[in-house]
Image (cartoon, rainbow, N blue to C red; front, side, top):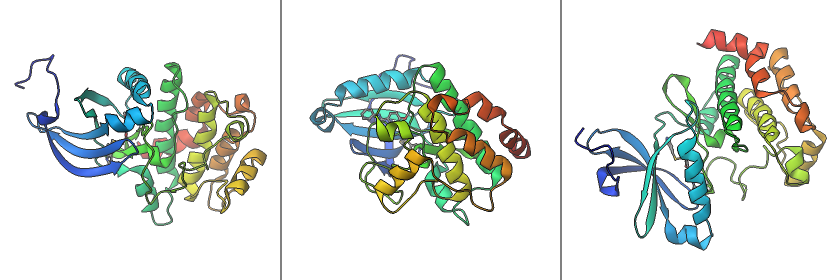
Length: 274
Ligand SMILES: COc1ccc(C(=O)Nc2ccccc2)cc1NC(=O)CCSCc1cnc2[nH]ccc2c1
């Protein structure tokens, strides 16, 4: 291509297309790089917004993390640049879109077991990689997963931007359904929160709603603290057994990510899938 390797990217290198989503700090657009016609997601954030919320250090830290994460199931930040008013992140574009929309468009708003297992294994892989890079709390939930072709899932991690009210659960601080007991109680968390969230995610993939969902927030917290949930009749014994090994109150007693990937339900269903 005509560009030198050390080319300084700028907004005019891209043709801006349709909006893909909105965050608290900015908007995401479909964009096309003019030379290669490569499609990307361009996330434009306003410095004024970031400074007002003292987020500038956060952006630096986040960009530092994102540029060092390299895994097939983690959305890549391809580059970033800024000018006096805005910071732009150039991110991979997921042509199949946000997973929570795909989930909600399924016949019973749930995935069949092979699909659920194939998606779960990819998320477990991404989390295992994050933990190996001592990055935790990747905030996994269907809203933060993007779907590519061939059923490839990537952890999109919508950064610190808070979603504008959207069809997905628009509780004011994002969904509480994925919070583990230790975060409901004492706000401390370690990498085992991700194992809990994986159990909630697997349940939601198979049932169409999260295990502790209730009409009242207080009721949801009560159920989470008591690990009180039930399996649906259509769920296989093997999938229920995996979920029951992840939704465990004591963080260190939760099934490890490696054992999730090795679990018979995951292995059997992924064989069918691949
Ligand atoms: C690696 O990813 C990211 C890295 C950083 C940030 C971020 O905002 N960081 C931040 C912001 C402010 C303060 C501090 C830190 C966000 C993302 N990722 C997304 O935002 C995903 C949706 S944009 C992509 C995308 C692609 N493909 C699609 N297909 C359909 C929709 C769609 C949407």
